Image (cartoon, rainbow, N blue to C red; front, top):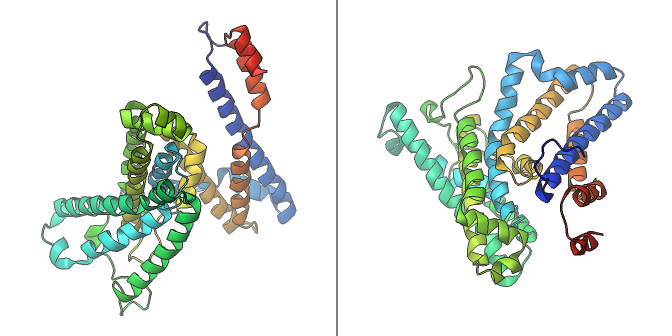
Length: 374
């Protein structure tokens, strides 16, 4: 590895360079596998590859759709990143994004007597903000359940959160059918949202709203919290080594609960802004947590990278739809490609030998340290 400065290279610096290289290799191999598969599934492979690469640039509305698909990933990616910081691999955010708008946002927005108290743009901002605050409280409370059960009874948070997602999913379905149901719609959904209840549109002819600005702000706030606050520092130690954190005097249980609640709160806000920005009614579906998890894994513990990753994933989603609409290649091909990329990113041993050799070569160690690295 070539040195670009006279300053001594650190172990962290070398590790980050190899992580970036591993990311580039994973994406390149995923794209290569996708292109190879295209030759097997279509009679027009070059046309499909063309739309795969430049599809979103062929029309203005497709570029706007990239940002549109990017919006929810910003917030759900931050939510997953917060939980990942404390080593909480809970999937409960999936429940947070549907419970928050179901219990808080939709009842407030559809209450004409309450929502219409303050008219105009000021009223919209106040009530949407109130919905976000209430949704954050609901999401934060729900997200406490898996880590609390884990710390108290030792139950695996992945299993617990998966079961809770099923339970809350059935509850939301019942709540929509019996409490929010609109008999005149013919759908299993609530009454339509008022026209003035939607966040301000930023790009004409699209569903890009102020949600994207809120997401970018949360990415910056999440980064500042994790790397520039005392609680964020404690959360990183808890996530890396809970036993060491306990021996250092950190309240492991309280740190995990607080940061997990923060992640659930962000997921609740994502659900509310998503349903107001995208849907005419509440039917139970809001933001996709799987995309947020993908962004969190790709960002590699750096929330500032979530906008770049979410834009890349949004680009892949739009280019897959463009390719499917203009050729006979199914959109599921992009799902296969992203799955391959995730599997390669999960392979921690990729380039590990070269990384360790670079650390031994460029970093200063005592003879005893070098023996330990062998």
